[in-house]
Amino acid sequence: MSTFGIIGAGNIGSQVARVAIAQGNEVVIANSRGPETLADLVAELGPKARAATAEEAAAAADVAVVSVPLRAYRDIPVEPLAGKIVLDTNNYYWERDGHVEALDRGEATVSGLLQEHLPTSKVVKAFNHITAPSITTDGTPAGTENRRALVTASDYPEAIELVTRLYDGAGFDTVSVGPLSESWRAERDRPAYGARQNAEQLEANLARAQRVI
Ligand SMILES: NC(=O)c1ccc[n+]([C@@H]2O[C@H](COP(=O)([O-])OP(=O)(O)OC[C@H]3O[C@@H](n4cnc5c(N)ncnc54)[C@H](OP(=O)(O)O)[C@@H]3O)[C@@H](O)[C@H]2O)c1
View 1 (cartoon, rainbow, N blue to C red):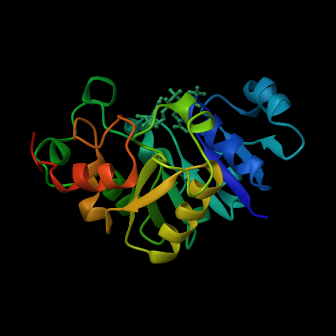
View 2 (view 1 turned 180 degrees about the vertical axis):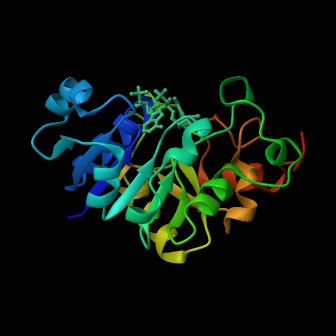
């Protein structure tokens, strides 16, 4: 049993909370407006969940999750996440987040930016190319024919292992694209983004991605 400190309690953060709790973990979850605004969500999640500030969620975390609009990534507390595995669900929507030149030029990755912001954490890409509702509806048992696969990437093998276990428990196979420097292959508008794919299809789509689109 671990405590998941989840920063961002929207579509994806709340779904990752459901997955974490279903696998026997505890959840401390935060948004930008304060814990009191999360009373309904916490009541629904049950006794293994509590609401907190982002700072408190980061401090309580054995494993952290960042699921905020990318424009807010610099608000994520740094010191309380030192040494911890941090799942990054974020995607870059310049229409929402404003332009980030290094991403527009294909010289950075979304998760690489978070890793730079959290230099002593172990950032790992997770749940970024599946729509939120599907996280709790599309999973199937291991070995199911045509099982859906999700991508991960990290510079830390232990972070990839953790996400692989979490995905499997939620009903998904894992395809690792390797280090964060390769994680652009699963970013927005690439072939792997969005569509339901099994592991073989996902590997093929990651391989044919273009760096600049
Ligand atoms: N929606 C999807 O299907 C989907 C799928 C895969 C990946 N993603 C990506 O995952 C990320 C989250 O998406 P979402 O759809 O879950 O977004 P969302 O529903 O808008 O939720 C965002 C959450 O982040 C919180 N937040 C914003 N700024 C914050 C800050 N400075 N400190 C702490 N919390 C903050 C918000 O809190 P308040 O409400 O209090 O402001 C809210 O709880 C995005 O990067 C998105 O592109 C989304």
